[in-house]
Image (cartoon, rainbow, N blue to C red; front, top):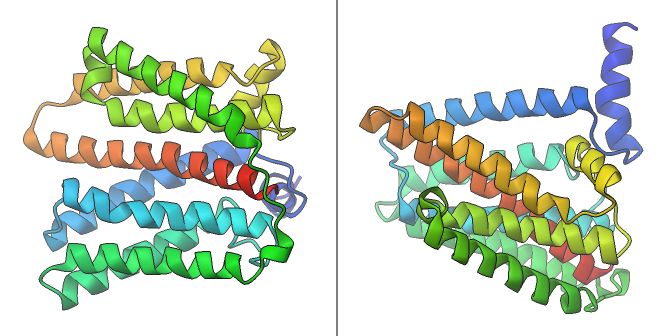
Length: 268
């Protein structure tokens, strides 16, 4: 196959026909994400924008913005296009977020608050879209009768593990985010009739017969990644970069989990 045919088969068709991910596009997107994260980190450092708790909190509405927008696309409230489904929506939300960050940082001394409020205003716009198009949504709150007990068990498990395991205690917010995501996948696939789009989770679910395997996969990947980051950390500059990478890891758990939950609640 030529380059055009490869691109069509592994990148265009999976989006056009909602086929989910394959090994080729998964590895490609992972490399792009890693490089993009490093570039953004370098740019922020050059501009003197320090990643801290206030910055992290200000990013929360933008994480919800992407998740909500993806769910609205599934509900046909936002037109489906290459920029409103995965992975295009990640690029779109990144452009919105990064542009908002640079502008608010330049025009306001209290830029974190302005950046935060602007993010919530964008989420509010999505909420208005939903309210004006309620006829397109068939709310299904049955998902909560599965989600609430299982997510409670999952989060309690993380709490108990944090008592015994130092890496879990030190990075509990990452485990909470990814076990939240794992719960939405487990509930969606095992109880609500959804299917898994990612290659490795789909393979493991086929072997085990249950999406509960996501808890074990998430835990194993996080433990290995955190151990390696701790092992490689030597300087304060390393710590700043690792903290930034952990923020990206949090987004990769919290945003998909929120999108999954919203989809189930909206019945799409």
